[in-house]
Image 1 (cartoon, one colour):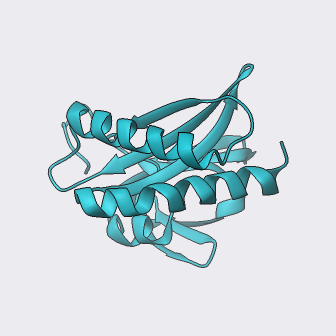
Image 2 (cartoon, one colour; image 1 turned 30 degrees about the horizontal axis):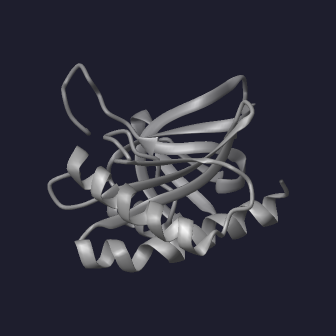
Length: 163
């Protein structure tokens, strides 16, 4: 499947679910259409104030499953998944970066820079496709979003928190 067709599928899936989530008071964090092995997965990541429950995921899944069956926007077979983005959530959209500016993040690069592929630092901002983080001793690093495999929140499990 081409990237263009895949992004069209994601956009169609996003438009289909948005009114349902608005009505339920749930935020659509991200939508992905991904191939793993021989199977395709349509993944919705949802969030709400106070966090999502299994019941929220189940209610959204049942509702969107019916909508997807009726609209039939995806020609091949796929597995539908609805879940929380988790505590180490990926930052994808501009509003994610704005919301978590000042928090610790992990930037994983597609290709290493000076032999290093993963950087942990404080998110200083995003302008266009440029993501800036502050490493230890206020060393500033700027990455182009296209150079990253992912950018996600960093949780320090030893201290038990985001920062």
